[in-house]
Length: 163
Ligand SMILES: Nc1nc2c(c(=O)[nH]1)N[C@H]1C(S)=C(S)[C@@H](COP(=O)(O)O)O[C@H]1N2
Ligand SMILES: [Mo]
Image (cartoon, rainbow, N blue to C red; front, side, top):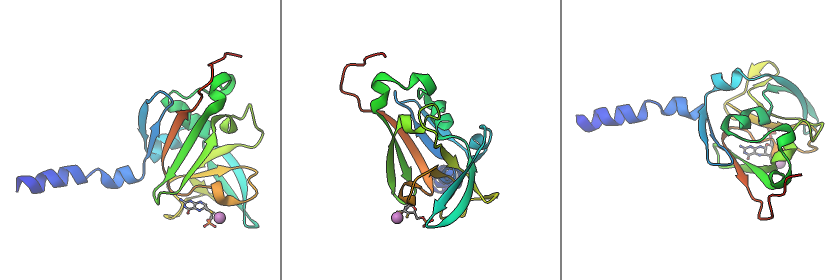
């Protein structure tokens, strides 16, 4: 009986966790964001071409999500941070890595968002709760569906020059 109660207590938060996003920042800072947390961030609309079909996605800039775990943004992405990567992992194990500077709207005109809606509706189960959308990508291979974890990792082995 005790074991049963313990199992119920341990398993209860699982459905909620499955809809959340596990973040790890460049110095190991961690956060679990819910869909509601993500929905409070400023929203951006991006049109994406998936095999010739135009799709309208909506969600926060990826950089604004990464900022929640101490990731440098804007003008602070310089020097050694140009060798910092963002590793995106999906529920099915699919993984995509991008350079942190790629996610900075001050560096590139094409934006990267963590979409939670397409054509005004929440994402389908095989795409949501979050899908990384990289504006301007010619093929959708990096358009990671079912994003469940994002880790920011500093790879620099050079001198942390500040310029
Ligand atoms: N989680 C996840 N995202 C993924 C993939 C995948 O296998 N798993 N495949 C990618 C590839 S190779 C392509 S072409 C597109 C396919 O998107 P679609 O199935 O929505 O057309 O999703 C991308 N995102
Ligand atoms: Mo693909």
